[in-house]
Image (cartoon, rainbow, N blue to C red):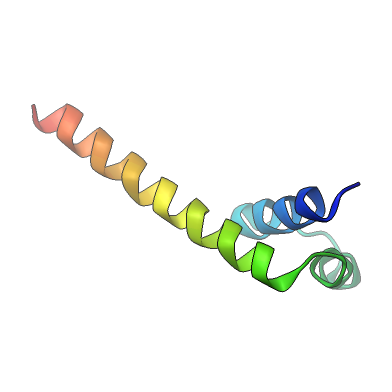
Length: 61
């Protein structure tokens, strides 16, 4: 699996809080690249905030 996909998997697992054992979580983070993980986490947060703003504007009219 590519480094990007390993990093994406680590970020998504951390976001939903299902990591299994601690050693598995550490292994996922160690196998990825820190800058890629940070970038993906930042984009995930921006996407969540953007989605919430979209829903609020949609409901508010």
